[in-house]
Image: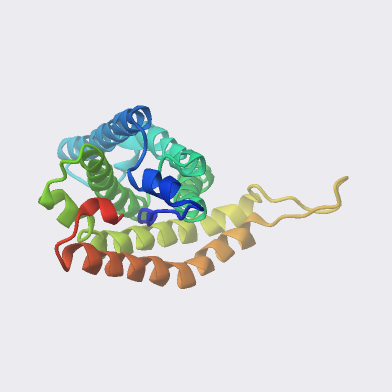
Length: 244
């Protein structure tokens, strides 16, 4: 899904708050620049891999296999963003960032990787394409912001492309989970049945259905949040460091 909203946290003393508004220190900034550059490059590799595979095959079917390894690596690498929030070098909500990152990691490993039958589904390419374009723009945005040299084109793309890419990604995610349901039900993947020594049961099939249902309240909230952010950032002249 789309990136977490960021804001300046409140401090008990004015001088502490003032320091926080200045952003991370030099060492943390250098680390974040390197991290975002690496992640931008990683998603560019995925984009190039998709294009090359399409040109070689002349078809968009089954393109997932051409970028499976870098997709798993760089999407899993996004887990570090939760740590960045937790230690305070990025002023984002740990909960919101955690939800967004973990949902993608979950789809990557617990659905697409675990249910190999869905890997050839067109819906996988749908969300992979949406993720790829989104992440190239997002990590570029963060990189240039940290360097205090953000081109307007990247800022505009950051707060405009999501209008199409977000629904596109969510559609691909939901269709992929839906396609996995019959195979999960048939194999009992990740399910735990009674009786067992722990007296505990878990139905992964039902869990996936609950995940799908959770998109109903969450998608509109996050989508309209981004629309409000777009109006805030692009609607009037404002220094980008004061917004996400």
